[in-house]
Image (cartoon, rainbow, N blue to C red; front, side):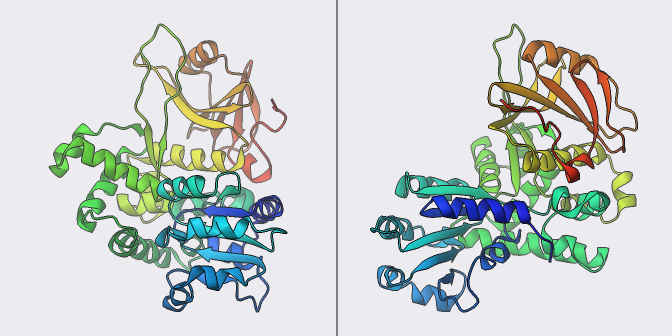
Length: 385
């Protein structure tokens, strides 16, 4: 088992101060494994809402939950949104005899429901696949190729990992989404998701996918939001400042797990990946996910102008803006784009993440940082607001 000490500590801290904690992450990312580590071996306070027996136990939720004490875990809660008002009532009892850990595989509707029903009582913790800080720098190549979903990364062989990801995509589209109330045909969503994979790392434009699928642009935007809410696609929103330049206003899209991206693109081996046209985009998305998982930040976005200047990631940390550039090159250099971003955005520092092994300055406020540094610490460890 891979120890996920930082996540485990964050979860314990959240449970110590909040009556209800919502742990959100994509399917099969390890939420249940993490939650079970907090429960006593013989605990009856675990409910898996994909298990018919546990669903039957919650036919009368107030009766079933009101007698429990300590920690209660409810898994796949997006299947029973009617539970949230009941959790509010139970969490408000004097003495707080119970704390609830709620696990969900969808972010949008789930978090809206919890924020409305559990305002002031809830804390949210996010979990993704494995990260370099959990696996170490030696895992970079395997993690990039296979992705961070545990059963894909830990598969005995590359063929087993590919087979698991193929099955994951099919199950997710044909079973999971319909169970959550999605009424879009699985075949259409698979075609759309594959299109998103080809847009990976690019600014989104709904017109072309809409024409290809024969649907309206509003339908395409809805499909994109569905996959975003299911935590398998990331929409990185644009950063805006008051400049006399036309700035990009549409989001960048990424398939969040690099292994699923490669499966959708038909990439099976590292040799395939290194010769693929999406190599640079795949590297960028992989770096973005590792940075966002490791670096403390209040907000994350990207910045680009129609004149060609851009910054892959802009992190806001208190009053400071920090820039991240993702370069798959042996020797990163200063570029006009970085120089313009430093001046126009007032960036405090810029890190150029690359696959080398040395950390070195490129220019004033600009530093080359090996991706392996994220296995040992943060990109900007000393920059606090």
